[in-house]
Length: 159
Image (cartoon, rainbow, N blue to C red):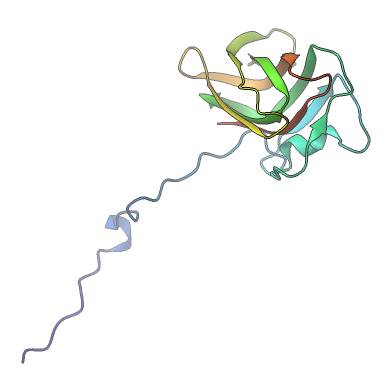
């Protein structure tokens, strides 16, 4: 019997990442990355707006009724974005706008979409930026209509 040699290892700079491992894009809106909620149109002390960017889908912001609702998010800084990911309940129609300026004044539409009615269960929606990608410092989520008087936003992720 011949002794078996251990497999050769590549030098660290030439090693390939493991198959099926994709690096997740950082969420430019997350509190952990430096994102901040600047404004919401409804305040509920039991479900504050910071819950939207805390990274926990179990926590959420809740509207206090009527539409439209708006949530203004300051991103970690100017960054390229291509996708906005939402986790909500009772939301029917949304518009996402972005602003690349130092102050959140002039916005342009990044994406629009309708969400499927889920009877109060979590709705997941990935919205692609209309032009493929764009630079933004601020993102505004406009909830144009809902399936119920009240809606909730569990997460908004900007990638």
